[in-house]
Image (cartoon, rainbow over all chains, first blue to last red; front, side, top):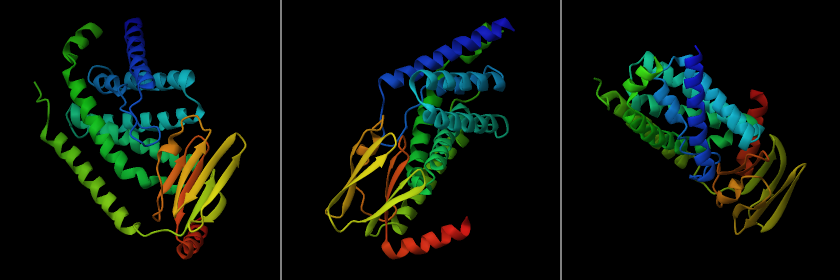
Length: 164
Length: 129
């Protein structure tokens, strides 16, 4: 148990470092709040050697801590909406439909963007913001494919041994 | 050992991209006409409607800041805003019906509308609520 907590803590720290790098070097796509989402690397890879609820915990804790340190209340709503939706979609894609790590990651990237956009539409009370929908879909596929390819390079079998 | 890239992964990615392109085209075709006015809303409440035909500056006064929307030769853009991220100033000029500039931190939305159509839309929205 304590071993699990420790390894989850390390992974939260890793995800936070990835997020922090993106805070320092933002790659703007000209759309509010959009970024590559390197922290999803931890979530995507985590789905393959941790239990879903552990991955969920890592993702939520990372989002809470990052918004607390660098963001504001609004950023938290967008991040949580995106993070939770993409987690759900990725688990379903992996377990029910048998997609590979790249497919899971693409679905995660796209659904993350959809979640954020829906949250933004609710916050500003205006559906015209859905104008960004096609751009965000394509961006989600690109970032998802990149993250999935990277996650696929991680020697997951070795991590499983360490993790016990 | 699983193959790294499964066929269905590629199909998924390509499928979503194609869907997005179709969506983009549909939006382009339906929303391509020049608008006559812009509507500014703050947190879902209408702040004002302004004609695109006359050059003007609109200062949107908020509790916690200001957004200055500029209309110049039929196009509207966010000239200045004291929001934390400043994305709204990078969103360029809008003039076609349905185009928007969104300032998320201030919950300000600027959208191009067509004078006659907008009244119909409002009526529909009212019924839907």
